[in-house]
Length: 184
Image 1 (cartoon, one colour):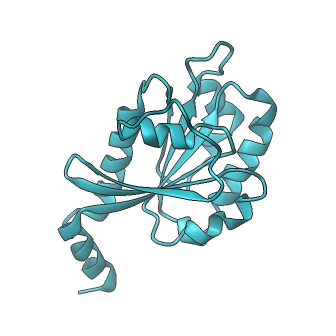
Image 2 (tube, rainbow, N blue to C red; image 1 turned 90 degrees about the vertical axis):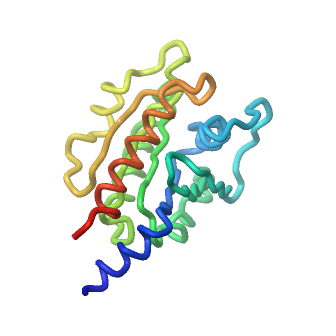
């Protein structure tokens, strides 16, 4: 029995997943996490470090790491890469000025060895705001079609209304579980 098989079997007993939620500051990472967990989203301040939430969803234990996205914190992101099963990249679809920076940061993450094989969900957040770019426009601007190293999906959502958050998390869980919890 190979090490990978042993690790898969150990993980299967726990049905536990580690999700890392990253994106530029003010993209809506904490709001998404709080909304998904049914918490109040009226008073959210910038994340100056990280938040960890453990959620039970569809028989899985999700350990979600929400890490601050300010420029001064991005160099610390690599401290959270270990054992990541899924990367949730949150984009502010209404902030057109920062999409070049957003694309650069995302593509630099995708070459990280410790994130190799992680499922990638791109939440095109703030779809409820006037002037927000569609998920297809974000897909094009972030050059997502060039990604061949990760399974990925982009979903337009709104952290405020909760629109499509469940769909995104369900897709992420399904993709990860098809890799981790399948019998050899």
